[in-house]
Image (cartoon, rainbow, N blue to C red; front, side, top):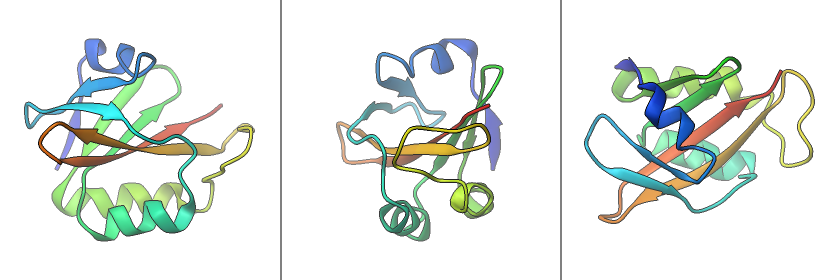
Amino acid sequence: MRRELPDRDWKALGPGALIGPDGRTYRRRTTRIERADAEALAEGGCPVVTYLPGGRLVWHDEDDAWPAWADARAALTTGMPDPDSVTGGRWESADGGTALVLVWHD
């Protein structure tokens, strides 16, 4: 399921926290995640959160999570982002929930 998250959540990305639609608070645990690690998270069924230029933050879970990752896979970089590249990280909640956060750069 794809859900737009409110402005308060995308503004919280900078400080490294966001509240998912599941009510959990996720905090950044890694930055510049490697492609294989991101793939493993997506294959494991964790939610994928995409931050799109212009300030849109979208939560993808269930059947929508894998396509969101597949769209970003080829553009993922661990270096300095270029236009049309994606950086990503592993975010976790206190109770062990995990989300893959992908940031698209313009």
